[in-house]
Image (cartoon, rainbow, N blue to C red; front, side):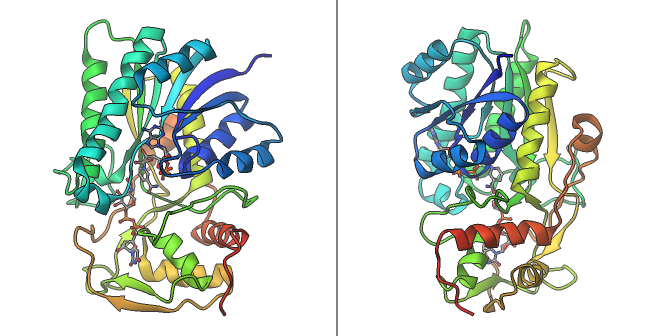
Amino acid sequence: MERTKILVTGGAGYIGSHAVVELYNAGFQPVLVDNFSNSSEKVLSGIEQILGTKVPFHNIDCNDAEAMRAVFAEEGSLRGVIHFAAFKAVGESTQKPLEYYQNNVGSLLTLLQIMREFGVEALVFSSSCTVYGIPDALPVTEQTPTKKANSPYGATKQMCEDILRDVAAAPNNTLRTILLRYFNPIGAHPSAKIGELPLGVPQNLIPYVTQTAAGIREQLTIHGNTYDTPDGTNIRDYVHVVDLAKAHVVAVQRLLEAQGEAVETFNVGTGRGNSVLEVVQAFERASGQKLNYTIGPPRPGDVPAIYADVTKATEELGFQTTSTLEEALASAWKWQLSLGGEVKK
Ligand code: NAD
Ligand code: WQD
């Protein structure tokens, strides 16, 4: 039987590559688009090693309408799209706001236009818990009010959500969209053939932790320990990237079965909050490595604590997490070791 084709923009990226594997394993035919602006060709060979087959790939920029049109025309029978492609570095977005608005908002507009031209009516969009800002109450549900974004990156996610809600509300709309608000994705595929590959000095916690344990970085700096949390460090909801990837499969299935409203929003996390110190301790247990860390000042813009209420995703999407924090961290460590970084004990 012919596999149902799903276009995956940003399919060579961290989350996209894991979603490609899970889509294929669930019987879909992922078709990848990426311009390697934050990834590399090596990811494609990692995917091929896991699946035992190549997946169709197009090296193009999602902002290039003609090139995107050519992909839709060539592939012929795309049934849906998962739009991962975006720039995602919060700090960099304050330095390069125009590039962020162009790439993140511009690419969505181009994509929507072409999907309409080709009658492709199912879209999963990568949103983020960043839309909640500093929440007034925890855990956050999809009804928790969003706050004005404190970075251009966050603003692009809010704008994209608004665009998709407006499109859904228009008369004669035929597009069905699921907005997935990811919390903090971590870990790697159990094969360690794909994982997170930050360019340069990592800004995110887990790659910094694994690179420190591998001796690539001297020391982890914990950004503040005087927050109003049980141990004073920030609390986040760390979700295994493979669990997150599977949320995309159930979202695509739901869209293709035409269940639910024209636009739906789901939190994707574990429903658990863990502090930075808890992450460090869990990493030490998972890896058997002692981590060199120090406490530094708070990082400007950090949310003291946030974690998800995932009731809606569990009940309506059938989403489930299977990994513990330690398992996710063990997979991140295995991936780090596979990259060949020397381990300093
Ligand atoms: P990533 O940078 O690893 O993946 C994004 C991929 O898109 C990269 O391979 C990049 O080369 C590609 N890309 C970017 N712009 C493109 C363009 N114009 N045309 C073609 N390809 C392009 O990031 P990720 O962590 O996998 O994130 C995927 C999505 O999830 C993004 O939309 C991001 O904003 C969102 N998100 C990520 C996180 C996170 O912590 N990683 C959290 C919430 C939301
Ligand atoms: C996690 C915790 C840091 C590095 C970001 C984006 C968000 C979303 C997910 C895309 C925080 C602490 C970190 C370090 C540390 N992405 N930390 N030392 O900030 O929760 O969220 O990624 O949508 O929009 O803002 O993730 O991994 O940077 O930080 O102490 O060297 O680790 O202060 O408490 P964050 P993170």
